[in-house]
Length: 243
Length: 243
DNA sequence: CGATAAATTTAGGCATGCCGAAAAAATTGT
DNA sequence: ACAATTTTTTCGGCATGCCTAAATTTATCG
Ligand SMILES: [Mn+2]
Ligand SMILES: [Mn+2]
Ligand SMILES: [Mn+2]
Ligand SMILES: [Mn+2]
Image 1 (cartoon, rainbow over the protein chains, first blue to last red):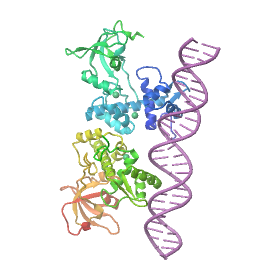
Image 2: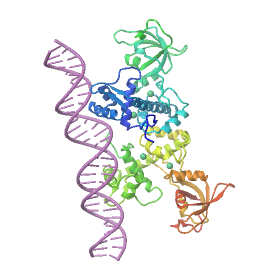
Image 3: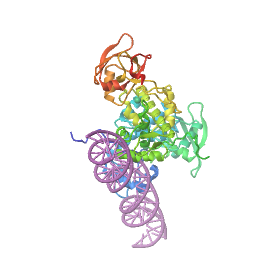
Image 4: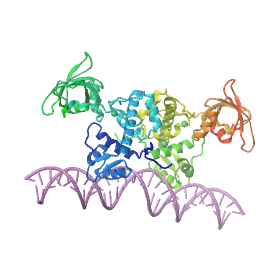
């Protein structure tokens, strides 16, 4: 039987290949612009020249689509691989928090390595043990075993206008120190938030945070407000989402 | 503060380096002869020339001791690293069996990769979660976090004389098919065994296996009898252990 | 002892994935 | 439009860890 189009195999590629497709995929997870060569280099912490070479290889492998001097996109097979890696990463993070008592700011680096090493069997057993979770500790959606994933309709707190209310659906995990700050302020996933107002010129955003009676007001700087993604309670007049 | 002699750091080396020291260590775990270059190559599945090169590197790194054309041994630091790797490997196998429902013949390959990837934190949390186990699923002893390990006084069933009785303390995990055979025959760790007799010229060994009333007799081939390590019930006359 | 055989090391190469420097293409500003 | 700047690619090299083939050393046997 020759290899066929419907092969589930996916032949996962090296750890480097896996990280490249994962970064290419992640760049468009919450926004639409495809990633440029230098942005890719930046996120991976490698030189631009390394990206040029590896992108050529990804194209040869049928994982990426690339016109020279333009942005890098994934092929269907590349997206499948990326989703499989994202699934691995997020299930591993969930495991580390739920079973090994890691704090949510400690899991990213460990998952970044383990995702390349565990077997499919390991991942599926882990998913079962954890109760088939759909979100990781930071609220990022976990694709299912077939690569299906639904990205919640969420918006960065930083772009919401005064009066807007909703729940925190996702917290960017790219900065561990920020995660620790949020823990210290007792801000977490699914907390209710209301935008009270904002200072002009990129100043802090005043918000009311907290479920039920125990809520408090505080000012959040731009980096914090950009890391918090909010699922709106209801369509609300005067918000910046009409675009 | 300069690096000092009592540094616990150990700077673990590459995955290859880790596998080399682990194999060098393991060769002398149940017996005393140090490993030769070609035996090392055999166990690692690499060419002899690759071993020559890597052994030179291990010596440079202060992990191994080696006179050209003679056997390879570990330095104290090499042994520390090896014990840390053995600990990792065996804790991971234990985790896979106890928490992820792997069969005992499925865990070796997965652990062989994961051992190089998990962090010290991961391993210590895992050890705690598993209740600080001292044996892996095959009965191999798990060194503690400081590298202390006690190797039980056990002997291969294949070398025991008729009349000898004891408990199965360890089952070599190097052949998954053999492990499946033993499962099918319902032979497992801590089972009681009695050597009934043996056919000459490397023929099968007749044994009685099983705890309490439910015991049975069967013949074991040389490979099976060599994989089973027995802790003797009591010193027994007429056994081959006097050497 | 010497000749063969076996084990080990050395020499020359290959694949992967990275780098810095230089060249080429695209973008920007006037 | 075109010169300056930025982005991207190409080029030559390096480090790891592996290989085969060819020495070289050690072991074995008549
Ligand atoms: Mn990774
Ligand atoms: Mn995450
Ligand atoms: Mn290994
Ligand atoms: Mn084992």
